[in-house]
Length: 88
Figure 1 (cartoon, rainbow, N blue to C red):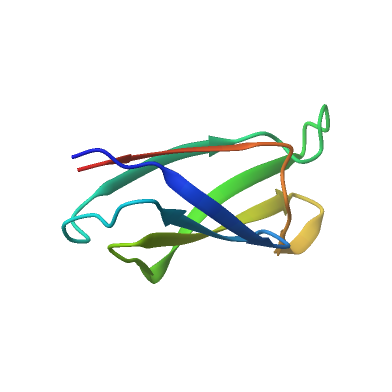
Figure 2 (figure 1 turned 90 degrees about the vertical axis):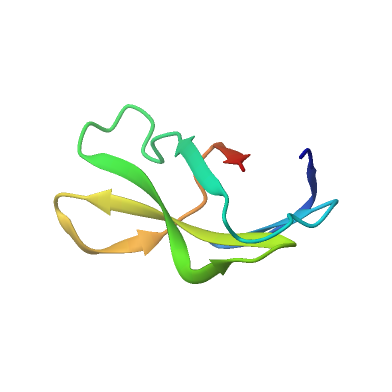
């Protein structure tokens, strides 16, 4: 099975990736990474987390969170880049 992203909606660290072809079902795996939002800041990290129920046959919703050791709680932020792979 092969598909590509048709578009991506972004709302301050909250993303929805839409597929150009629906997946057969929601039994797919997602892997990814994102760049540190703080650049060279050694105490700032970006995490990717999927929403409960965020996997659908036509889309996937996830959030990117900026975590800092001196700032609580983590904040939704748009990192310089995000890479995801969907495997079924």
